[in-house]
Amino acid sequence: MTGNLAGNKNLESSLGNLPEWELADLYPSIDSVEYKDDLALSLSDAKAFEAGYAGKLNDYAKSDFEKLALSVKTFEDIEERMGRIMSYAVLVYTGETTDPVNAKFYGDAQEKITTASSHMLFFALELNRIENDVLEKAMTGCKALAYYRPWLEDLRKDKPHQLEDRIEQLFHDKSVSGRSAWNRLFDETMASLRFKLEGEELSVEPALNMLQDTDGRKRELAAKEIGKVLSDNSRIFTLITNTLAKDKEISDRWRNFEDVADSRHLANRIERPVVDALVSCVEESFPDISHRYYMMKAKWLGKDKLRHWDRNAPLPSKHEKIYGWDEARDIVLDAYAGFSPQMSDIAKQFFDKNWIDAPVRDGKSPGAFAHPTVPSVHPYVMLNYLGKPRDVMTLAHELGHGVHQVLAAEQGALMSSTPLTLAETASVFGEMLTFRSLLERAETKAERKILLARKVEDMLNTVVRQIAFYMFEREVHEARRKGELTTQVIGDIWIDIQKKSLGPVFEFDEAYRSYWSYIPHFIHSPFYVYAYAFGDCLVNSLYAVYQDAEDGFQERYFDMLKAGGTKHHSELLKPFGLDASDPDFWYKGLSVISGMIDELETLD
Image (tube, rainbow, N blue to C red; front, side, top):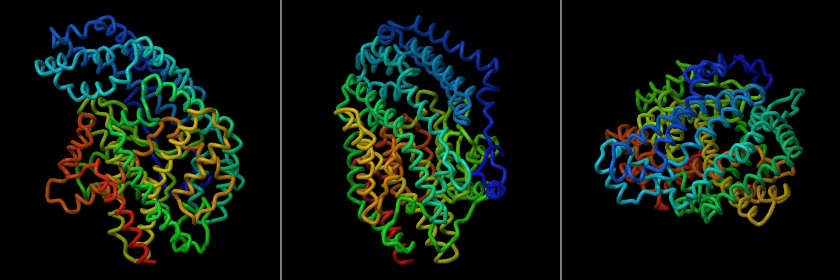
Protein backbone atom coordinates (compact mmCIF):
# COMPACT_ATOMS: atom_id res chain seq x y z
CA MET A 1 0.00 0.00 0.00
CA THR A 2 1.29 3.45 -0.82
CA GLY A 3 0.61 6.86 0.62
CA ASN A 4 -0.17 7.68 4.24
CA LEU A 5 -3.17 7.19 6.49
CA ALA A 6 -3.07 10.38 8.52
CA GLY A 7 0.47 9.40 9.43
CA ASN A 8 -0.85 6.61 11.64
CA LYS A 9 1.26 3.52 11.04
CA ASN A 10 -0.78 1.40 13.46
CA LEU A 11 -3.94 2.23 11.56
CA GLU A 12 -2.23 1.51 8.26
CA SER A 13 -1.14 -1.90 9.54
CA SER A 14 -4.61 -2.76 10.90
CA LEU A 15 -6.30 -2.12 7.58
CA GLY A 16 -4.29 -4.72 5.68
CA ASN A 17 -3.32 -4.42 2.04
CA LEU A 18 -5.49 -1.77 0.45
CA PRO A 19 -5.93 -2.21 -3.32
CA GLU A 20 -4.92 0.32 -5.94
CA TRP A 21 -6.72 0.24 -9.25
CA GLU A 22 -5.18 -1.13 -12.40
CA LEU A 23 -6.09 1.18 -15.28
CA ALA A 24 -4.55 -0.92 -18.05
CA ASP A 25 -8.01 -2.10 -19.09
CA LEU A 26 -8.43 1.43 -20.41
CA TYR A 27 -4.87 2.14 -21.60
CA PRO A 28 -1.42 0.71 -20.75
CA SER A 29 0.02 4.12 -19.78
CA ILE A 30 -0.34 7.84 -20.40
CA ASP A 31 2.29 7.70 -23.14
CA SER A 32 1.12 4.45 -24.73
CA VAL A 33 0.68 4.04 -28.47
CA GLU A 34 -2.89 2.86 -27.92
CA TYR A 35 -3.84 6.08 -26.14
CA LYS A 36 -2.20 8.32 -28.73
CA ASP A 37 -3.79 6.39 -31.59
CA ASP A 38 -7.26 6.66 -30.05
CA LEU A 39 -6.78 10.37 -29.45
CA ALA A 40 -5.82 10.95 -33.08
CA LEU A 41 -8.61 8.68 -34.33
CA SER A 42 -11.18 10.58 -32.28
CA LEU A 43 -10.37 13.80 -34.10
CA SER A 44 -10.18 12.27 -37.58
CA ASP A 45 -13.39 10.25 -37.12
CA ALA A 46 -15.23 13.25 -35.69
CA LYS A 47 -14.21 15.37 -38.67
CA ALA A 48 -15.24 12.62 -41.09
CA PHE A 49 -18.55 12.23 -39.25
CA GLU A 50 -19.29 15.93 -39.60
CA ALA A 51 -18.34 15.93 -43.28
CA GLY A 52 -20.46 12.86 -43.96
CA TYR A 53 -23.64 13.71 -42.07
CA ALA A 54 -23.95 17.45 -41.35
CA GLY A 55 -26.92 18.94 -43.17
CA LYS A 56 -28.24 15.55 -44.31
CA LEU A 57 -30.13 14.13 -41.32
CA ASN A 58 -33.53 15.58 -42.20
CA ASP A 59 -33.30 14.12 -45.70
CA TYR A 60 -32.31 10.71 -44.32
CA ALA A 61 -35.24 10.86 -41.89
CA LYS A 62 -37.57 11.28 -44.85
CA SER A 63 -36.04 8.94 -47.39
CA ASP A 64 -33.21 6.75 -46.03
CA PHE A 65 -33.99 5.39 -42.59
CA GLU A 66 -31.05 2.98 -42.61
CA LYS A 67 -28.54 5.80 -43.14
CA LEU A 68 -30.08 7.74 -40.26
CA ALA A 69 -29.74 4.65 -38.06
CA LEU A 70 -26.13 4.23 -39.19
CA SER A 71 -25.42 7.83 -38.27
CA VAL A 72 -26.61 7.23 -34.70
CA LYS A 73 -24.56 4.04 -34.39
CA THR A 74 -21.46 5.79 -35.73
CA PHE A 75 -22.03 8.68 -33.33
CA GLU A 76 -22.28 6.22 -30.44
CA ASP A 77 -19.03 4.47 -31.42
CA ILE A 78 -17.09 7.75 -31.60
CA GLU A 79 -18.62 8.93 -28.31
CA GLU A 80 -17.58 5.68 -26.64
CA ARG A 81 -13.97 6.06 -27.75
CA MET A 82 -13.84 9.65 -26.55
CA GLY A 83 -15.48 8.56 -23.29
CA ARG A 84 -12.78 5.95 -22.82
CA ILE A 85 -10.06 8.58 -23.29
CA MET A 86 -11.62 11.00 -20.82
CA SER A 87 -12.36 8.28 -18.28
CA TYR A 88 -8.71 7.31 -18.30
CA ALA A 89 -7.55 10.92 -18.01
CA VAL A 90 -9.95 11.59 -15.12
CA LEU A 91 -8.88 8.49 -13.19
CA VAL A 92 -5.17 9.18 -13.67
CA TYR A 93 -5.67 12.75 -12.52
CA THR A 94 -7.87 11.78 -9.57
CA GLY A 95 -5.19 9.46 -8.23
CA GLU A 96 -2.76 12.36 -7.76
CA THR A 97 -4.18 15.76 -8.64
CA THR A 98 -1.11 17.66 -7.46
CA ASP A 99 1.27 15.85 -9.83
CA PRO A 100 2.07 18.35 -12.61
CA VAL A 101 2.50 15.53 -15.14
CA ASN A 102 -0.97 14.16 -14.37
CA ALA A 103 -2.47 17.65 -14.37
CA LYS A 104 -1.00 18.38 -17.80
CA PHE A 105 -2.11 15.00 -19.12
CA TYR A 106 -5.66 15.63 -17.94
CA GLY A 107 -5.71 19.19 -19.26
CA ASP A 108 -4.36 18.17 -22.66
CA ALA A 109 -6.87 15.31 -22.96
CA GLN A 110 -9.72 17.63 -22.08
CA GLU A 111 -8.68 20.20 -24.67
CA LYS A 112 -8.21 17.65 -27.45
CA ILE A 113 -11.48 15.84 -26.76
CA THR A 114 -13.31 19.18 -26.61
CA THR A 115 -11.85 20.02 -30.02
CA ALA A 116 -12.82 16.65 -31.46
CA SER A 117 -16.31 16.68 -29.99
CA SER A 118 -16.96 20.13 -31.42
CA HIS A 119 -17.27 18.38 -34.80
CA MET A 120 -20.01 16.19 -33.29
CA LEU A 121 -21.99 19.05 -31.82
CA PHE A 122 -24.18 19.48 -34.89
CA PHE A 123 -25.66 16.00 -34.53
CA ALA A 124 -28.02 16.44 -31.58
CA LEU A 125 -28.99 19.92 -32.75
CA GLU A 126 -29.82 18.70 -36.24
CA LEU A 127 -31.69 15.63 -34.99
CA ASN A 128 -33.88 17.89 -32.90
CA ARG A 129 -34.79 19.98 -35.92
CA ILE A 130 -36.45 16.95 -37.56
CA GLU A 131 -40.23 17.23 -37.24
CA ASN A 132 -41.80 14.86 -34.72
CA ASP A 133 -43.99 13.04 -37.24
CA VAL A 134 -41.07 12.60 -39.64
CA LEU A 135 -38.84 11.10 -36.93
CA GLU A 136 -41.67 8.90 -35.68
CA LYS A 137 -42.21 7.49 -39.17
CA ALA A 138 -38.48 6.80 -39.51
CA MET A 139 -38.32 4.96 -36.17
CA THR A 140 -41.44 2.96 -37.03
CA GLY A 141 -40.00 2.00 -40.41
CA CYS A 142 -36.49 1.01 -39.30
CA LYS A 143 -35.74 -1.53 -36.58
CA ALA A 144 -32.12 -0.36 -36.20
CA LEU A 145 -33.28 3.20 -35.58
CA ALA A 146 -36.13 2.12 -33.30
CA TYR A 147 -33.54 0.57 -31.00
CA TYR A 148 -32.41 4.12 -30.17
CA ARG A 149 -35.95 5.40 -29.54
CA PRO A 150 -35.37 6.02 -25.79
CA TRP A 151 -32.28 8.10 -26.54
CA LEU A 152 -33.90 10.03 -29.38
CA GLU A 153 -37.01 10.80 -27.34
CA ASP A 154 -34.87 11.77 -24.36
CA LEU A 155 -32.77 14.03 -26.59
CA ARG A 156 -35.86 15.92 -27.72
CA LYS A 157 -36.54 17.04 -24.16
CA ASP A 158 -33.55 19.35 -24.56
CA LYS A 159 -34.99 20.93 -27.69
CA PRO A 160 -36.66 23.96 -26.03
CA HIS A 161 -33.31 24.97 -24.55
CA GLN A 162 -31.09 24.53 -27.59
CA LEU A 163 -29.40 27.54 -29.16
CA GLU A 164 -28.32 28.37 -32.66
CA ASP A 165 -25.50 26.11 -33.83
CA ARG A 166 -22.71 28.69 -33.72
CA ILE A 167 -23.63 29.76 -30.19
CA GLU A 168 -23.69 26.12 -29.08
CA GLN A 169 -20.24 25.78 -30.66
CA LEU A 170 -18.98 28.80 -28.72
CA PHE A 171 -20.38 27.53 -25.41
CA HIS A 172 -18.77 24.16 -26.08
CA ASP A 173 -15.34 25.45 -27.09
CA LYS A 174 -15.09 27.93 -24.22
CA SER A 175 -15.95 25.33 -21.59
CA VAL A 176 -12.27 24.36 -21.33
CA SER A 177 -11.25 27.88 -20.38
CA GLY A 178 -14.47 28.51 -18.45
CA ARG A 179 -16.29 26.13 -16.10
CA SER A 180 -13.84 23.26 -16.55
CA ALA A 181 -10.89 25.48 -15.68
CA TRP A 182 -12.56 26.72 -12.49
CA ASN A 183 -13.42 23.13 -11.55
CA ARG A 184 -9.79 22.17 -11.97
CA LEU A 185 -8.63 25.16 -9.93
CA PHE A 186 -10.92 24.08 -7.09
CA ASP A 187 -9.67 20.47 -7.21
CA GLU A 188 -6.00 21.39 -7.23
CA THR A 189 -6.41 24.02 -4.53
CA MET A 190 -8.33 21.64 -2.27
CA ALA A 191 -5.83 18.82 -2.82
CA SER A 192 -2.92 21.12 -1.94
CA LEU A 193 -4.36 22.32 1.39
CA ARG A 194 -2.59 21.10 4.52
CA PHE A 195 -3.97 21.03 8.06
CA LYS A 196 -1.55 21.08 10.99
CA LEU A 197 -2.78 18.63 13.57
CA GLU A 198 -0.83 16.93 16.35
CA GLY A 199 2.52 17.69 14.78
CA GLU A 200 1.53 16.46 11.32
CA GLU A 201 0.42 18.13 8.12
CA LEU A 202 -2.66 16.33 6.84
CA SER A 203 -4.53 16.61 3.57
CA VAL A 204 -8.26 17.31 3.63
CA GLU A 205 -9.53 13.71 3.82
CA PRO A 206 -7.60 12.60 6.94
CA ALA A 207 -8.33 15.97 8.55
CA LEU A 208 -12.07 15.58 8.00
CA ASN A 209 -11.82 12.01 9.29
CA MET A 210 -10.67 13.36 12.64
CA LEU A 211 -14.14 14.88 13.09
CA GLN A 212 -15.26 11.30 13.79
CA ASP A 213 -12.64 10.68 16.49
CA THR A 214 -13.80 9.35 19.86
CA ASP A 215 -11.75 12.07 21.61
CA GLY A 216 -13.76 15.30 21.73
CA ARG A 217 -10.61 17.37 22.17
CA LYS A 218 -9.17 15.99 18.93
CA ARG A 219 -12.44 16.67 17.12
CA GLU A 220 -12.46 20.26 18.34
CA LEU A 221 -8.83 20.85 17.34
CA ALA A 222 -9.47 19.34 13.90
CA ALA A 223 -12.68 21.34 13.42
CA LYS A 224 -11.00 24.62 14.27
CA GLU A 225 -7.95 23.91 12.11
CA ILE A 226 -10.14 22.94 9.15
CA GLY A 227 -12.14 26.12 9.61
CA LYS A 228 -8.97 28.22 9.86
CA VAL A 229 -7.38 26.79 6.70
CA LEU A 230 -10.62 27.06 4.72
CA SER A 231 -11.09 30.63 5.98
CA ASP A 232 -7.51 31.52 5.03
CA ASN A 233 -8.33 30.37 1.50
CA SER A 234 -11.85 31.81 1.44
CA ARG A 235 -10.92 34.49 -1.07
CA ILE A 236 -10.22 31.97 -3.81
CA PHE A 237 -13.21 29.74 -2.92
CA THR A 238 -15.52 32.75 -2.89
CA LEU A 239 -14.19 33.82 -6.30
CA ILE A 240 -14.68 30.30 -7.71
CA THR A 241 -18.23 30.14 -6.33
CA ASN A 242 -19.17 33.58 -7.66
CA THR A 243 -17.69 32.86 -11.07
CA LEU A 244 -19.35 29.48 -11.52
CA ALA A 245 -22.71 30.75 -10.27
CA LYS A 246 -22.52 33.64 -12.75
CA ASP A 247 -21.43 31.28 -15.52
CA LYS A 248 -24.49 29.13 -14.79
CA GLU A 249 -26.77 32.17 -14.71
CA ILE A 250 -25.53 33.24 -18.16
CA SER A 251 -26.10 29.75 -19.57
CA ASP A 252 -29.53 29.47 -17.94
CA ARG A 253 -30.57 32.87 -19.28
CA TRP A 254 -29.53 32.06 -22.83
CA ARG A 255 -31.26 28.69 -22.66
CA ASN A 256 -34.44 30.08 -21.12
CA PHE A 257 -34.34 28.14 -17.87
CA GLU A 258 -36.59 29.92 -15.41
CA ASP A 259 -35.49 28.47 -12.05
CA VAL A 260 -31.88 28.18 -10.88
CA ALA A 261 -32.19 24.38 -10.64
CA ASP A 262 -34.26 23.72 -13.78
CA SER A 263 -31.27 22.68 -15.87
CA ARG A 264 -30.40 20.03 -13.26
CA HIS A 265 -33.99 18.80 -13.18
CA LEU A 266 -33.93 18.47 -16.97
CA ALA A 267 -30.63 16.59 -16.86
CA ASN A 268 -32.12 14.30 -14.21
CA ARG A 269 -35.27 13.86 -16.31
CA ILE A 270 -37.37 14.74 -13.30
CA GLU A 271 -40.08 17.33 -12.94
CA ARG A 272 -39.60 20.36 -10.70
CA PRO A 273 -42.80 19.67 -8.66
CA VAL A 274 -41.44 16.22 -7.73
CA VAL A 275 -38.23 17.76 -6.36
CA ASP A 276 -40.16 20.54 -4.65
CA ALA A 277 -42.34 17.91 -2.94
CA LEU A 278 -39.24 16.04 -1.74
CA VAL A 279 -37.64 19.22 -0.37
CA SER A 280 -40.86 20.38 1.28
CA CYS A 281 -41.44 17.00 2.96
CA VAL A 282 -37.87 16.81 4.27
CA GLU A 283 -37.87 20.40 5.51
CA GLU A 284 -41.20 19.83 7.24
CA SER A 285 -39.68 16.74 8.90
CA PHE A 286 -36.59 18.49 10.31
CA PRO A 287 -38.08 18.71 13.85
CA ASP A 288 -39.22 15.09 13.90
CA ILE A 289 -36.02 13.55 12.62
CA SER A 290 -32.82 15.62 12.82
CA HIS A 291 -33.81 17.96 15.67
CA ARG A 292 -35.16 15.05 17.74
CA TYR A 293 -32.20 12.80 17.08
CA TYR A 294 -29.52 15.38 17.88
CA MET A 295 -31.30 16.33 21.13
CA MET A 296 -31.02 12.66 22.07
CA LYS A 297 -27.37 12.54 21.02
CA ALA A 298 -26.56 15.58 23.16
CA LYS A 299 -27.92 13.65 26.15
CA TRP A 300 -25.81 10.61 25.25
CA LEU A 301 -22.72 12.80 25.09
CA GLY A 302 -23.60 14.51 28.38
CA LYS A 303 -23.97 17.95 26.80
CA ASP A 304 -26.60 20.66 26.89
CA LYS A 305 -25.46 21.90 23.50
CA LEU A 306 -23.68 20.25 20.58
CA ARG A 307 -20.94 21.86 18.54
CA HIS A 308 -20.51 21.08 14.87
CA TRP A 309 -17.61 18.74 15.63
CA ASP A 310 -20.00 16.60 17.70
CA ARG A 311 -22.35 15.92 14.79
CA ASN A 312 -20.56 12.74 13.65
CA ALA A 313 -18.99 11.87 17.00
CA PRO A 314 -19.12 8.16 17.90
CA LEU A 315 -21.36 7.24 20.81
CA PRO A 316 -19.41 7.22 24.10
CA SER A 317 -20.55 3.75 25.19
CA LYS A 318 -18.28 1.88 22.82
CA HIS A 319 -14.94 2.48 21.15
CA GLU A 320 -15.57 2.62 17.44
CA LYS A 321 -14.33 -0.48 15.71
CA ILE A 322 -11.80 -0.29 12.89
CA TYR A 323 -12.58 -2.67 10.03
CA GLY A 324 -9.68 -4.16 8.10
CA TRP A 325 -10.06 -4.26 4.33
CA ASP A 326 -10.65 -8.02 4.13
CA GLU A 327 -13.35 -7.84 6.81
CA ALA A 328 -15.08 -4.93 5.07
CA ARG A 329 -15.02 -6.82 1.78
CA ASP A 330 -16.57 -9.93 3.36
CA ILE A 331 -19.28 -7.94 5.17
CA VAL A 332 -20.40 -6.23 1.96
CA LEU A 333 -20.20 -9.29 -0.29
CA ASP A 334 -22.07 -11.44 2.24
CA ALA A 335 -24.81 -8.82 2.53
CA TYR A 336 -25.11 -8.61 -1.24
CA ALA A 337 -25.18 -12.41 -1.53
CA GLY A 338 -28.06 -12.56 0.96
CA PHE A 339 -30.11 -10.55 -1.51
CA SER A 340 -28.78 -12.05 -4.73
CA PRO A 341 -25.74 -14.25 -5.46
CA GLN A 342 -25.47 -12.54 -8.85
CA MET A 343 -25.17 -9.16 -7.17
CA SER A 344 -22.38 -10.44 -4.95
CA ASP A 345 -20.60 -12.06 -7.91
CA ILE A 346 -20.60 -8.78 -9.85
CA ALA A 347 -19.29 -6.86 -6.83
CA LYS A 348 -16.59 -9.47 -6.18
CA GLN A 349 -15.02 -8.68 -9.55
CA PHE A 350 -14.08 -5.22 -8.27
CA PHE A 351 -11.89 -6.84 -5.61
CA ASP A 352 -10.53 -9.68 -7.72
CA LYS A 353 -9.64 -7.57 -10.77
CA ASN A 354 -8.24 -4.42 -9.09
CA TRP A 355 -11.10 -2.12 -10.04
CA ILE A 356 -10.83 -0.32 -6.68
CA ASP A 357 -8.40 2.34 -5.46
CA ALA A 358 -8.71 2.46 -1.66
CA PRO A 359 -5.69 4.08 0.10
CA VAL A 360 -5.49 7.67 1.26
CA ARG A 361 -2.59 9.38 -0.53
CA ASP A 362 -1.24 12.90 -0.55
CA GLY A 363 -2.65 14.65 -3.60
CA LYS A 364 -5.41 12.10 -4.17
CA SER A 365 -8.89 13.54 -4.62
CA PRO A 366 -11.00 13.43 -1.44
CA GLY A 367 -14.27 11.57 -1.12
CA ALA A 368 -15.39 8.52 -3.06
CA PHE A 369 -17.05 7.65 -6.35
CA ALA A 370 -17.82 4.91 -8.85
CA HIS A 371 -16.84 5.90 -12.39
CA PRO A 372 -18.75 3.96 -15.07
CA THR A 373 -16.08 4.62 -17.76
CA VAL A 374 -17.63 3.14 -20.95
CA PRO A 375 -19.77 0.03 -21.57
CA SER A 376 -16.98 -1.80 -23.41
CA VAL A 377 -14.71 -1.69 -20.33
CA HIS A 378 -16.04 -1.64 -16.70
CA PRO A 379 -16.47 0.78 -13.79
CA TYR A 380 -13.79 1.78 -11.31
CA VAL A 381 -14.34 2.65 -7.64
CA MET A 382 -12.35 5.30 -5.79
CA LEU A 383 -12.29 5.41 -1.97
CA ASN A 384 -10.27 7.00 0.79
CA TYR A 385 -10.53 4.03 3.12
CA LEU A 386 -9.71 4.55 6.80
CA GLY A 387 -11.52 1.60 8.35
CA LYS A 388 -14.36 3.50 10.03
CA PRO A 389 -17.84 1.96 9.99
CA ARG A 390 -18.86 4.75 7.61
CA ASP A 391 -16.06 3.66 5.29
CA VAL A 392 -17.59 0.18 5.16
CA MET A 393 -20.92 1.76 4.26
CA THR A 394 -19.19 3.91 1.64
CA LEU A 395 -17.70 0.74 0.16
CA ALA A 396 -21.19 -0.81 0.03
CA HIS A 397 -22.54 2.42 -1.51
CA GLU A 398 -19.96 2.71 -4.28
CA LEU A 399 -20.12 -1.01 -5.10
CA GLY A 400 -23.88 -0.56 -5.47
CA HIS A 401 -23.13 2.06 -8.10
CA GLY A 402 -20.64 -0.32 -9.68
CA VAL A 403 -23.13 -3.18 -9.90
CA HIS A 404 -25.69 -0.80 -11.41
CA GLN A 405 -23.19 0.42 -14.00
CA VAL A 406 -22.18 -3.12 -14.96
CA LEU A 407 -25.82 -4.16 -15.43
CA ALA A 408 -26.77 -1.02 -17.38
CA ALA A 409 -23.76 -1.31 -19.71
CA GLU A 410 -25.76 -3.57 -22.02
CA GLN A 411 -27.71 -0.47 -23.12
CA GLY A 412 -24.62 0.94 -24.84
CA ALA A 413 -22.83 4.25 -24.61
CA LEU A 414 -25.85 6.42 -25.40
CA MET A 415 -28.41 4.78 -23.13
CA SER A 416 -26.55 3.21 -20.20
CA SER A 417 -26.25 6.38 -18.14
CA THR A 418 -28.95 6.72 -15.47
CA PRO A 419 -30.30 10.12 -14.34
CA LEU A 420 -28.79 11.14 -11.02
CA THR A 421 -31.99 10.67 -9.05
CA LEU A 422 -32.22 6.97 -9.92
CA ALA A 423 -28.45 6.56 -10.13
CA GLU A 424 -28.38 6.62 -6.31
CA THR A 425 -30.92 3.79 -5.96
CA ALA A 426 -28.53 0.84 -6.22
CA SER A 427 -25.88 2.50 -4.07
CA VAL A 428 -28.25 3.31 -1.20
CA PHE A 429 -29.91 -0.11 -1.54
CA GLY A 430 -26.45 -1.68 -1.18
CA GLU A 431 -25.92 0.32 2.01
CA MET A 432 -29.30 -0.80 3.36
CA LEU A 433 -28.53 -4.46 2.68
CA THR A 434 -25.20 -4.11 4.48
CA PHE A 435 -26.76 -2.33 7.44
CA ARG A 436 -29.58 -4.87 7.82
CA SER A 437 -27.04 -7.68 7.68
CA LEU A 438 -25.00 -6.11 10.49
CA LEU A 439 -28.15 -5.40 12.53
CA GLU A 440 -29.20 -9.05 12.35
CA ARG A 441 -25.82 -10.05 13.78
CA ALA A 442 -26.14 -7.71 16.78
CA GLU A 443 -25.89 -9.81 19.93
CA THR A 444 -26.69 -7.19 22.58
CA LYS A 445 -29.01 -4.24 23.10
CA ALA A 446 -25.99 -1.94 23.28
CA GLU A 447 -24.64 -3.21 19.97
CA ARG A 448 -28.03 -2.76 18.33
CA LYS A 449 -28.20 0.80 19.65
CA ILE A 450 -24.78 1.62 18.20
CA LEU A 451 -25.73 0.24 14.80
CA LEU A 452 -29.11 2.00 14.73
CA ALA A 453 -27.61 5.31 15.80
CA ARG A 454 -24.92 5.08 13.16
CA LYS A 455 -27.47 4.27 10.46
CA VAL A 456 -29.73 7.13 11.53
CA GLU A 457 -26.77 9.49 11.31
CA ASP A 458 -25.89 8.18 7.87
CA MET A 459 -29.49 8.71 6.75
CA LEU A 460 -29.56 12.20 8.24
CA ASN A 461 -26.36 12.96 6.37
CA THR A 462 -27.92 11.60 3.19
CA VAL A 463 -31.37 13.15 3.50
CA VAL A 464 -31.35 16.14 5.85
CA ARG A 465 -27.83 17.32 5.15
CA GLN A 466 -28.12 16.95 1.37
CA ILE A 467 -31.47 18.79 1.26
CA ALA A 468 -29.88 21.49 3.43
CA PHE A 469 -27.07 21.65 0.85
CA TYR A 470 -29.70 22.03 -1.88
CA MET A 471 -31.42 24.82 0.05
CA PHE A 472 -28.04 26.52 0.53
CA GLU A 473 -27.23 26.27 -3.17
CA ARG A 474 -30.60 27.72 -4.11
CA GLU A 475 -30.09 30.75 -1.89
CA VAL A 476 -26.53 31.29 -3.14
CA HIS A 477 -27.47 31.07 -6.82
CA GLU A 478 -30.57 33.22 -6.38
CA ALA A 479 -28.59 35.85 -4.47
CA ARG A 480 -25.79 35.76 -7.08
CA ARG A 481 -28.30 36.79 -9.75
CA LYS A 482 -28.53 40.13 -7.94
CA GLY A 483 -24.77 40.68 -7.74
CA GLU A 484 -21.46 39.28 -6.51
CA LEU A 485 -21.49 37.69 -3.07
CA THR A 486 -18.98 38.31 -0.30
CA THR A 487 -17.57 35.54 1.86
CA GLN A 488 -19.57 37.02 4.73
CA VAL A 489 -22.87 36.71 2.86
CA ILE A 490 -22.18 33.13 1.76
CA GLY A 491 -21.21 32.25 5.34
CA ASP A 492 -24.43 33.81 6.66
CA ILE A 493 -26.51 31.70 4.27
CA TRP A 494 -24.58 28.59 5.27
CA ILE A 495 -25.03 29.09 9.02
CA ASP A 496 -28.72 29.99 8.67
CA ILE A 497 -29.48 26.77 6.74
CA GLN A 498 -27.43 24.66 9.17
CA LYS A 499 -29.42 26.02 12.12
CA LYS A 500 -32.72 25.22 10.39
CA SER A 501 -31.73 21.71 9.43
CA LEU A 502 -29.81 20.54 12.51
CA GLY A 503 -31.91 22.22 15.18
CA PRO A 504 -31.61 24.37 18.32
CA VAL A 505 -29.33 21.97 20.17
CA PHE A 506 -26.40 23.07 17.98
CA GLU A 507 -24.16 26.07 18.52
CA PHE A 508 -21.92 27.21 15.65
CA ASP A 509 -18.65 29.11 15.98
CA GLU A 510 -16.87 31.31 13.46
CA ALA A 511 -14.70 28.42 12.25
CA TYR A 512 -17.76 26.69 10.80
CA ARG A 513 -18.73 29.63 8.59
CA SER A 514 -16.29 28.51 5.88
CA TYR A 515 -17.21 24.81 5.76
CA TRP A 516 -19.36 25.30 2.68
CA SER A 517 -16.19 25.77 0.66
CA TYR A 518 -14.94 22.16 0.73
CA ILE A 519 -18.10 20.57 -0.72
CA PRO A 520 -17.10 19.49 -4.27
CA HIS A 521 -20.67 18.94 -5.49
CA PHE A 522 -21.34 22.68 -5.33
CA ILE A 523 -18.52 23.15 -7.83
CA HIS A 524 -18.73 20.15 -10.13
CA SER A 525 -22.46 19.44 -10.25
CA PRO A 526 -24.70 22.28 -9.06
CA PHE A 527 -27.87 20.98 -7.39
CA TYR A 528 -26.67 17.36 -7.66
CA VAL A 529 -27.14 16.89 -3.93
CA TYR A 530 -30.90 16.33 -3.82
CA ALA A 531 -30.32 13.10 -5.75
CA TYR A 532 -28.92 11.55 -2.55
CA ALA A 533 -32.07 12.35 -0.59
CA PHE A 534 -34.19 11.17 -3.51
CA GLY A 535 -32.28 7.88 -3.55
CA ASP A 536 -32.44 7.35 0.21
CA CYS A 537 -36.18 7.97 0.52
CA LEU A 538 -36.80 5.88 -2.60
CA VAL A 539 -34.78 2.98 -1.20
CA ASN A 540 -36.57 3.17 2.15
CA SER A 541 -39.85 2.71 0.30
CA LEU A 542 -38.34 0.12 -2.03
CA TYR A 543 -36.90 -1.90 0.85
CA ALA A 544 -40.32 -1.98 2.51
CA VAL A 545 -41.71 -3.48 -0.70
CA TYR A 546 -38.83 -6.00 -0.72
CA GLN A 547 -39.55 -7.11 2.85
CA ASP A 548 -43.20 -7.78 2.01
CA ALA A 549 -42.69 -9.06 -1.54
CA GLU A 550 -43.34 -12.50 -2.86
CA ASP A 551 -40.77 -14.16 -5.13
CA GLY A 552 -39.69 -12.07 -8.06
CA PHE A 553 -38.56 -8.85 -6.36
CA GLN A 554 -34.88 -9.41 -7.21
CA GLU A 555 -35.76 -9.94 -10.87
CA ARG A 556 -37.79 -6.72 -11.00
CA TYR A 557 -34.99 -4.89 -9.18
CA PHE A 558 -32.36 -6.09 -11.67
CA ASP A 559 -34.62 -5.14 -14.58
CA MET A 560 -34.76 -1.61 -13.15
CA LEU A 561 -30.96 -1.41 -12.95
CA LYS A 562 -30.46 -2.89 -16.41
CA ALA A 563 -32.74 -0.23 -17.93
CA GLY A 564 -30.05 2.43 -17.51
CA GLY A 565 -31.37 5.65 -19.02
CA THR A 566 -34.01 4.08 -21.24
CA LYS A 567 -37.02 4.69 -18.97
CA HIS A 568 -38.53 7.54 -16.95
CA HIS A 569 -38.54 7.20 -13.16
CA SER A 570 -42.32 6.69 -13.20
CA GLU A 571 -41.94 3.65 -15.49
CA LEU A 572 -39.16 2.15 -13.38
CA LEU A 573 -41.02 2.52 -10.09
CA LYS A 574 -44.41 1.34 -11.35
CA PRO A 575 -43.66 -2.42 -11.04
CA PHE A 576 -43.06 -1.81 -7.32
CA GLY A 577 -46.26 0.18 -6.84
CA LEU A 578 -44.33 3.39 -6.08
CA ASP A 579 -45.01 6.91 -7.36
CA ALA A 580 -42.51 9.72 -6.68
CA SER A 581 -45.05 12.39 -7.62
CA ASP A 582 -47.13 11.51 -4.53
CA PRO A 583 -46.00 13.30 -1.32
CA ASP A 584 -46.99 10.17 0.61
CA PHE A 585 -44.10 8.42 -1.17
CA TRP A 586 -41.63 10.79 0.49
CA TYR A 587 -43.31 10.67 3.89
CA LYS A 588 -43.17 6.86 3.71
CA GLY A 589 -39.41 7.03 3.17
CA LEU A 590 -38.93 9.60 5.93
CA SER A 591 -41.05 7.50 8.32
CA VAL A 592 -38.35 4.80 8.18
CA ILE A 593 -35.86 7.26 9.69
CA SER A 594 -38.41 8.42 12.25
CA GLY A 595 -39.15 4.80 13.15
CA MET A 596 -35.49 4.08 13.82
CA ILE A 597 -35.32 7.12 16.10
CA ASP A 598 -38.42 5.83 17.88
CA GLU A 599 -36.63 2.54 18.54
CA LEU A 600 -33.52 4.36 19.76
CA GLU A 601 -35.66 6.18 22.30
CA THR A 602 -36.81 2.81 23.67
CA LEU A 603 -33.19 1.60 23.85
CA ASP A 604 -32.00 4.72 25.65
